[in-house]
Length: 281
Image (cartoon, rainbow, N blue to C red; front, side, top):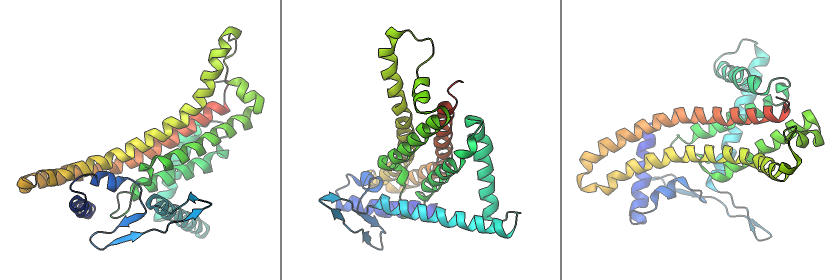
């Protein structure tokens, strides 16, 4: 943890000098085609274009691939350990604990009958968000869930899963008919139907913004606290210990936030799926 703070200070100092003390927070949290390994150097990612469309590999895309690969490798290891022995050990024991928690405390209570169909998707969502959140606390990495494009993609996937769940359980016409409360006066339909359609999109929008805002906020706070060292450089010997101390506190709090946000995103997605599947409730 302390190394992470030290690396952040090193990057902040470099960008502070190069940009005249402005914009270094955005430089740290926003996407780019470079990965800083200060003071060792910078890795420039390749620029790609197809038919004039920029499809360059950016920092957040690169780490999204790394996180996905890491998750695949970990799950393969866990699966192989289960083939060798039904009694989990080490990392398999940790994964079994998390899987049982997600199944029994999130998916099963919120979706109910037929939850098994959605369990693999929700487990994948939980593990990806959790690892992505925690990965952002590692020195020289980045929090990909602090990019609204990433959280929007996760929200779109959840939106599709919600619609699939509703149509699969109630039929295409039955699902969309069930969105309208029974016994509704015909003169209100012109108001209710647009509102219900809008409600279908506000759910994934809320998922997207909630995850993005919570993950980027913690990093901005940490960087802002460290920035006080450079703002008050005349009395840095007084400000630095306080700033680093508070930054470390926020850093440990970020570990808790990483767990909570993975739980909330998965829980809300499961809840929305359950509402679509069991419209009669």
